[in-house]
Image (cartoon, rainbow, N blue to C red; front, side, top):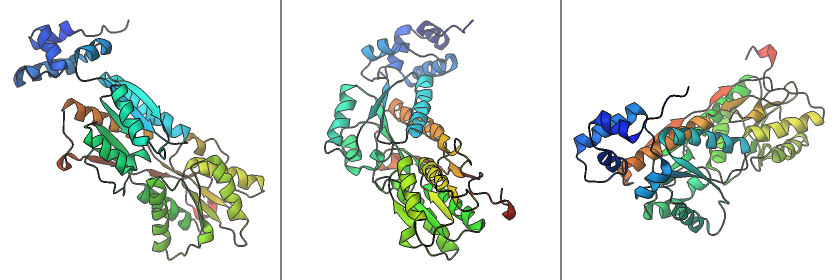
Length: 349
């Protein structure tokens, strides 16, 4: 049998206070002393008490729903983000509103601020490229809307809000250096959407590794596009049509890499003997191809869960976002070497 859920009466009994006092603490009313408030909070945590959301939202000025705002064509990324956010929301008694949108819409700021008010959200989690939109961030701060950003490290967009950063540059450096150490000097780069800071940071990491090993990269080897399978097929064909083909390709994400691998094999190119291909993110795309694709493991669900926990913490503390309150945590995706770049004679597994 499932364990019986704790009730507000159980919390009141453990904290040795009235049910009304528990309600006041849960609804963040100012009329409760700090010691009493702490006893109630300790009892809530110990009993894992989760108030009825409908009743709680009616009784409180604060709402218990968060929003996830995104503009990203990568379905696997969005699913992982949603799963991570939902996991933390369920653990902390929050609901989730999902809002896809177009980051380049002329009225994106009005759209999102109105959505927050209309849906009575307590705060929002923002993913790239929206999390890099300075106009949007400024509007959210001016309207006192709590938010947390998921961004690529190196994003200089000014904001005092907390953020979770991904060190794309360092991870891209490791991928490129792996290709160099397996004997490649002619390496192509398939870049994702230019509007995403992650694309820029991954290109910088790519160039850092080439520069470290005194390798020149011609403009013909740098192809700009989108984070899509279709771009991967087009990009690799463009590179394979060159008189001096690259012997390796670093694609900005696994979806691009999978498209590149697919199109290369259609042209009779052996992977990895004639062309090594690496991706980024460790999405299912990297594991559903033959051969499987070398990549950098980005724990998107963990990133989303941490971002959500950080947002909830700020909401509960009624923290006002000022420069001194800025908090950040950085994830560095880890290199995973697979068959798409492995050459047995090098001993690099």
